[in-house]
Image 1 (cartoon, rainbow, N blue to C red):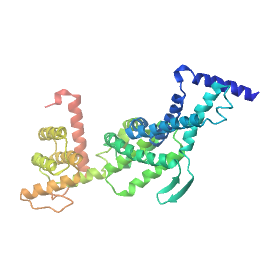
Image 2 (cartoon, rainbow, N blue to C red; image 1 turned 120 degrees about the horizontal axis):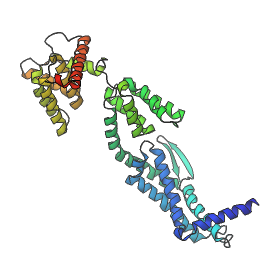
Image 3 (cartoon, rainbow, N blue to C red; image 1 turned 180 degrees about the vertical axis):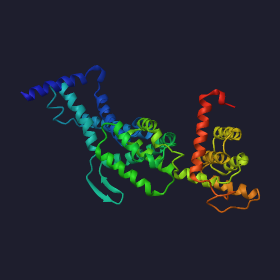
Image 4 (cartoon, rainbow, N blue to C red; image 1 turned 180 degrees about the horizontal axis):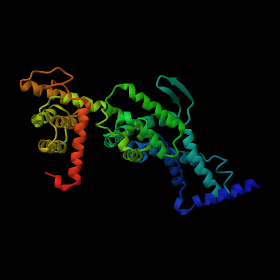
Length: 373
């Protein structure tokens, strides 16, 4: 009874597959190969599967899978095995169904099998038909990585630019996992281990924050990471009043700097540092001009200028430019690691008070137009 029901169901499916819009069965066989290759690519690039799948190397890998299935279909038609053609000669619909399944899944099984495997330092190497797809998949992985890396880097820099690694290394992953409902516990533990390995590397905090963003992007994707950073912005961003290491370094770097030389320092940093976009230079000049008319403490002006320049060209370039600018003005070449000031560096509480006064004044000007100059 079960055999009769199975044959009737298979015959109905085969009749549908043999319809005019699907004749010959090569369309369905090719679809099996396409799905197998596409699913394999998507499983490897969970962070942005659409971008990975639309790359030329990924399309080449999927095409090879489709051609393998079509080649298996052609071989079956040439060989004409008895169990498929002779035994099912009186059942054309069932024969079509078996032919499609045998060609599609048979090709996937054949090209993913190996006669034996040898363990090497780089992993296991299979000898057999699987070597072809393994080699092609390895080359496709590298090519896809190279094509996906630039947009991933731009995205993570835009998302994590104001994120403090020390404040976000626990809160941000926990919140991302809470937003996503189906992340396995093992994958969460693996990511937590990778985050712990970032901290002792000794890299700048900005790089650590970017690495944290890349790890999370691999698991939850770009959109979820962006939403999580937006939601947690006040809690994981850099706090200039919290005395984090970056603000302390800028305070030490800009101690005793004459703000009247702000434009000279900016020009020196731009000429010495990494290439800066034209719009970035223009925005910096506007900020410096506005800084000259703001009625705030000169030490706070120097701190703000240092923060802008460090974000634009990096702390090393700013330090070198300060040293040479001081030497050119007759102050002698100060030692690396800090600038000589007119007096002792202001205590941290003074810096905090200046920041609070500046923020309060800006808020009053924004809320009451009469306070604007």
